[in-house]
Image (cartoon, rainbow, N blue to C red):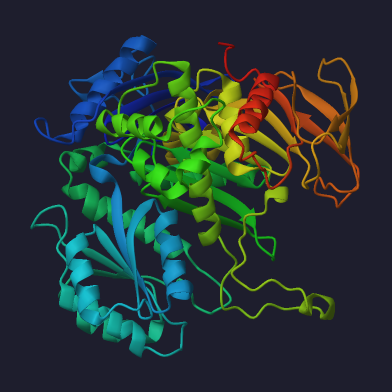
Amino acid sequence: MNGPAAEIRSILATDCGSTTTKAILIEKRGDEYQLIVRGEAPTTVEAPVEDVTAGVINAITEVEELAGRKLLDNGVIIKPQNGDEGVDIYISTSSAGGGLQMMVAGVVRNLTGESAERAALGAGAIVMDVIASNDKRLPHEKIERIRHLRPDMLLLSGGVDGGTTSHVVELAEIIAAARPRPRLGIAYELPLIYAGNVDAREAIQERLQDVMALEIVDNLRPVLERENLMPTRHKIQEQFLDHVMAHAPGYKKLIDWTDAPIMPTPGAVGEIIQTVSTQQDIAVVGVDIGGATTDVFSVFKNREAEPIFNRTVSANLGMSYSVSNVLAEAGLENVLRWVPFEIEVSDLRNRVKNKMIRPTTIPQTLQELILEQAIAREALRLAFEQHKQLAVELRGVQQQRTISEAFSQAESGQSLVNMTALDMIVGSGGVLSHAPRRQQAMLMMIDAFQPEGITHLAVDSIFMMPQLGVLAQVNPEAATQVFERDCLIHLGTAIVPIGVTNDGDECLTVQISGGGMSPVDESIPFGELRRYLLPSGEKATLKLQPSRRFDLGAGNGNAVEAEVTGGIVGLVIDTRGRPLEIPADAAQRVAQLTKWQTALDTYPTP
């Protein structure tokens, strides 16, 4: 690192993806950091090149040309900045070569097993399987499974500090018997991180020291009432760099170039989501919908008002390679409920299969676009449902209760995801970031996530969240300034009363003032979508009076006043009810969807 963060004038950052390497140049102009240019080139981790740095140099060369300044000297990044040449720091993330693939093991599946899964996901891993003492598999089945999957790394946890050691030692014996082989060649020593009961460390060392590269960290569940995930997450990322990345072609050279540890791409996206949540003190949900997987990130406060970060990866929900899985998991009826025209089921199936065969194709007609966006809604909805199941209060914990709560308390294991407390949703991935009209992205997110109360929505313009995530480790100020200024495209704010009644019944009275708008004072019946133009950066004051059956977060029938921020789409008032119901009758469905999409000017009129 060259000097303190305050002296950093320029930052070069790359993200080595599985197919494309993206490079961005950030400079300090006046008091603010700004994105200057962005370049990209094919990733070169595979044959024939087999050197990731070649793709990095190609992407930086494009940045050089676009910025009109010299950054490279004979294929080496010039550091620190000298006049108009070079940059002060260079940082990178990577998901090339399939990212980080892990297996985790815990004694009890929904206690330490779940904590281990959260630790691995939060570090940016794909969790291939969770082995647990009570997962109903016989020892030989567990051994066979570990051998078959060939992960990059294992995480073993179990037992609270001072508790019984026998179960976690049994799991260690199963792993030792499996002697798992890595994906990345014979010279690679497979890392195993032990984050369980401290009393079992000696026994774990005896059984695993000679079998794997054993690393020991603090127990991730030291007592039943508390998780301690950060030491494990940091160790996973350190091992990712020292073991997994070190064996991928060209990464040793890349590691020498960088001024901060290379992070797994999803781990870096999680960092920027956490940084924004911390700096603005807001609850955030982020989503990255790709071709093969959909990642969901969230920061919500628990009962003790501590912000808790969670990430889940739905490895079988995506828009190209995994598109058939979306159809299979969601069911045809759920996809078709978002389609505002009649279509044969066989026609829909054929279109989905074509997308799997040719994953890089983009929709050529309006009908194809609408179908793709219908499938995207279901991929997002299913991924969010899976996220809610893992982002939970700790299970098995005795919660303190007052007498009045004793009769109504929800069981522990309740989801942390509280939609009325949610302040912001950030969408990323081609189907959201590159939607031809921004209203399409906003409506997809409203339909899939079903926000409640008042929620701001935005999309990542050119997918630079990974680079900003690793930058947040070095210079949080620069990361958040560029995130707000250049990365986020603010779509606007959704206002959604919770409740259900009949179409046309009274639901919400709205008064809007300020923000350069003409004042609005109107009553909106149930079953409507309304759009009000409020430009990005403009703020308006809302006075909202729900009818007695509806709640905006302050209780049924209670008025709410709020200041909201605009965006490219503006303010969207959604009185369609929560949970959202779409008519099952085809003709009614088409009429209803057409009415809603016309209200937002979502698609061009045929």
